Image (cartoon, rainbow, N blue to C red; front, side, top):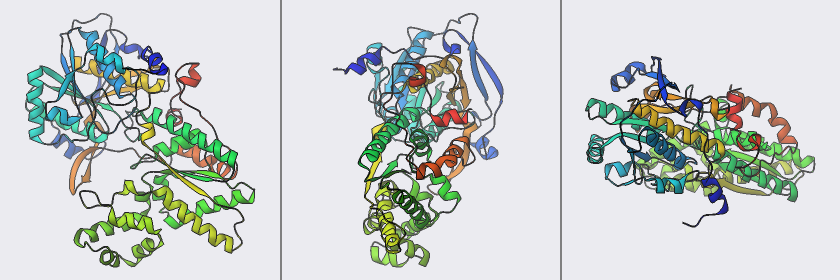
Length: 537
């Protein structure tokens, strides 16, 4: 395999571990836990894994002789920087237990377990992927593990390979599935443990226990570099407004973090839009007013950050989409379906640019719903702001020139070489998972806390997945799921943005973070996200 100079240098990087994981460990158990909500329902669904204690690892005085184990690992869902380090940490953790431990990677995500497609991950394979981005070591997939036939197929291949534990690396849905699998395997008494690891660049898998999901740090640093580059260009050319959509359909953590790192003129937070019941017209007017204010000072340029899921958080758009979904499910003629909209939704629909209105009616997913992720929100806002500014100019309220450029930063950040923080955090999560397995735990998520301190002082352990669950309606049924973390409007990160955005809107206060630094002083290379620093201050 041909490698770049950076790949060669990064391969030699040895990720840092918490002090507690550097030798033999002893496990400490806390009090029994309960789910964040719907305790009776969750307990009934998970009788074998409900109420387990939070556990932590501490250095032991003497090493315990541990038997060799075979373990399987699965990458589930979208890619996130650091996945390879979770696997290399797991591999090293198992080999530290016994050199005869074997690690099998299931290919293409959960479907690899079901279809019995796997590879033994040897040291020569692992060494090729240390500190690299991507999930290409074994590939990933979005197959959900939720049916008995799938579980039984997993038992079959695990028995064939002598696998006694599975580690599932994924987001909230994947870890929910991991817990369902753990519960089933306990019920069947088949002797297979299941451990989860918290992954998602979106940053919405966090709570009182999980401080951050892996990949969020690296992805936000990649996006912030690109935003900083665009800001420098905008400030140089002084003639473009850049509308930048950022990944994060269910929550605005990425937009908020990138806003804190770069200080744009406008950073929209979907959760605030929903809480204030803001209309699309109000959002457009707010942007247009900022454009006009800057133009009056001779600044016909600026930067707007937009969360990917904004459309679904605007109450009137949410109602419109819901109505269209219902109408188009029973009426294939678009004109007739649109004619059936309520007066309020019809007015919203009529206000949309033609291209966006078409996307709402033509692009459907397999369930017949609007494909919201395909709506080009950045272009929608550019067109509507342009129209609003033309009206303001006619009224004598705007004197500038407006030229909007749209961008969508998504896949650019998902497979970057992990930052030092993510390289260390992910390696620790994997190494820690090996210790959870060695201590007989199942239905747990690997837990690394105190992550704003130096890695030496990080706290390692595990949290029962059931503790993070509640019941939510999915596809018409109430199901147990890990509760997604939305941006908290009373939280320190949002308050920091809110306290500065009037100044950032009017003045040009751009920050230019530059590319991720892997070598150099700790204050440049090892800093966690602004979000994490503010939340843990």
